[in-house]
Image (tube, rainbow, N blue to C red):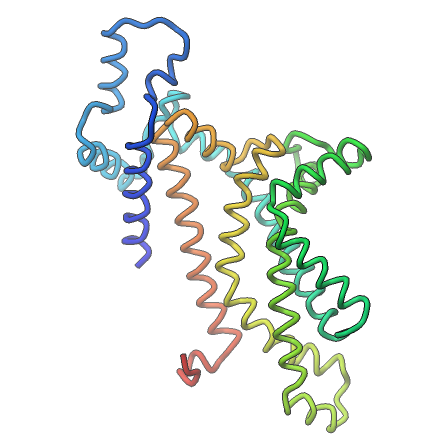
Length: 306
């Protein structure tokens, strides 16, 4: 199903870019004067005057051969432009995913164990704040507080090398993780409260097993199943949020590249970045299905009723 879905997505994005207002050639030339021969040559080079289906077929035939085309704005291969921007987006997404899953599961577990206490209420309030705050709003707040008022973190640039890049991307990763982390906290807390009330936990305590063993050997493992199930949505949230966060922090990643390409109607670049984002999301969902079966053996043997 992965390839048909990618074809449907690419066709839909190509159609939306085709009917969008504006002329990519005019965006390319800007205020520069041009004669009709130059305009015709540019349009012929990028097949802009061909019928829609022929343009899509031309693009698809090149994609099959590993060629995403040439950027209208940059006059460079789209694969080269994406390769230059990919590192920042991957680094930012990995930092955010680590924060979301690591800190989110930890806070959800702590809130479940301390249910009804001030700590539990504080975690719940954080969850409400996170869900209510879009990534770009949280990014502006963090940028102003920790980048301007308290100049603890850099406010622009992706950094060089592992540690410097991690330092530069700390605020963007926090902004991106906060809204998505709230979902993980909520799911983990609810799942652990439900698991802690089950009979097998009471039986384990009656056998004299330590709270730590009950938590890590039984409760946490069973509680992770709904978190893993929602992992696909979590990744989609992170990838979508990365577009806004990269623009907010002026990071040279794929998100900022996509927004710039949309504004200038650079169809080959739009198609290339969208296809990459879509393939990434589909592969993550495939990986989630595999991890789901590994964590819950009942799925492998078909003993879980849908």
